[in-house]
Length: 48
Image (cartoon, helix red, strand yellow):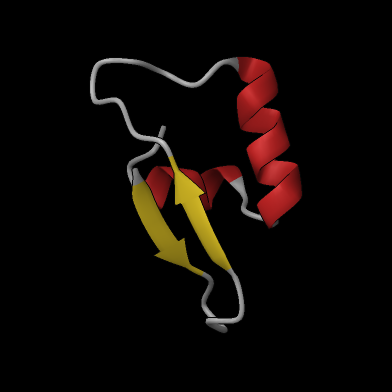
């Protein structure tokens, strides 16, 4: 599991990380919606 802080450090997000697996489309959509990240943010963090 990896833990990330939002830029304003008011929210903490934990993401289960599996180096050889990918996120499913619905899970990824839910993550983006719930935490307010863009696809670019996920890419920058090397999650996708």
